[in-house]
Image 1 (tube, rainbow, N blue to C red):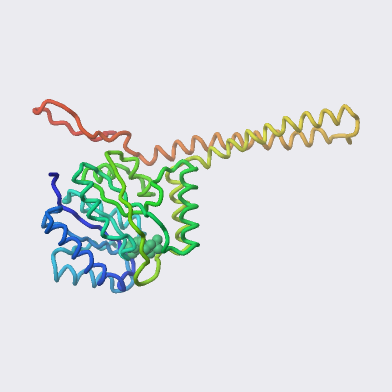
Image 2 (tube, rainbow, N blue to C red):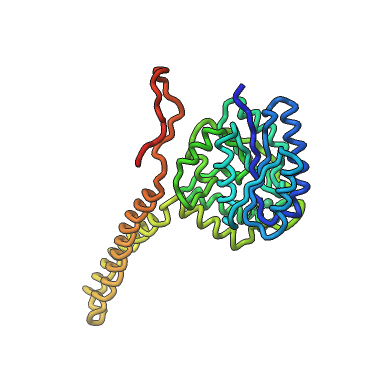
Length: 328
Ligand code: UDP
Ligand code: MG
C-alpha cells in the first residue's frame, strides 16, 4: 500500500458562518477514513485563511487549539481562491502523501473523499471530482458555468468538464505543479498538464448551506478571462485569421471594382480608395496578428514552465540523479 498521510486543504474567505459545521463534518469523515486504515492517523485538515475580514481566522485558531487534527495557514492578505489553494497545497506538499482540495461551504460532497482515496491506493496521482449534475445551481450559474467550460475548450485551454477544484493530488503530482512558475496560475488548467495516471469521481453538487457565494458575476468573468488568457494564445491567432479573411475579401472587392471600372460607371478615384481601404485593412490585421504571435511566444516563455516532468527512471542504484528540468 502507498504511504497515506492525507491533508484536506480548504481555502476560506469570510467563512465564519460555515466553518463550525464544516470542521465538524470533515473531522467525522477523516476519523472514519483513519479507522478504516485508508489514511494514516496523523492526517490533517488545513484551513487557509485568505485575508478574511470576519472571525474566520479566530475560529481556525481555536479549532487548532482544541484538536490537533485541524491546522491553519494564514495569508498576509486576500489573494483570491486560486492563490489561497496553491499556498495551502504547496505548504502541505512537503509533509503529505496526498492532498484533497475542497471548498469551505461543503458544496463538494465529502462522501466522495472515500472513492478518491481508494483511487489513490489503486495508483492514481490525480483524482478529479466531477459534478454529475448541477440540479442545485441556479439556472444562471449553470448556464454561465457550462458556457465557460465549452468556451475554454474551444479556445484551447483544456480543462476537465464540470470539474472545479475538488480533487486529490499525490505528493509527486504536487511536486510537478510546483514546477509551473507562472504568476497567473489557473489550477484546473494546469493540473491536466502535469500528467501522471488520473481518474475521476462523480458527485452531486449540494447547495451552499450557509453564507453567500464569494464568486459574484464580476469575479466569475475575471476568472474566465484569466483562465483563457493564461492558458492559450488562441485569441491572438484569431486576429491573424481575421486579417487573412479581410485580405481575401479585398481580392473580391478588387474584382468587383475592376468590373465596375471597365463598365465605366464609377466616379474618378472611387476604385483606388475602396481597394486600398480593404487591402490595407487586411494587411494591418495580418501584421498585428503576426506581432501578436511573437508576443504570445514571449508570454509563454516568460512563464518558465517545466518542459517535462519525469515519472520514473530505471537506473543503477548507485547513481543519484535529480530528475527535475534544470534550466537556470
Ligand atoms: N475563497 C477564497 N478567497 C476568495 C474567494 C473565495 O479563499 O477571494 C474561497 C471560499 O471561502 C470558498 C471557495 O473559495 O471556500 C469557493 O468560494 P464560493 O463557495 O464562494 O464559490 P462558488 O461555490 O459560489 O463558486
Ligand atoms: Mg461554493
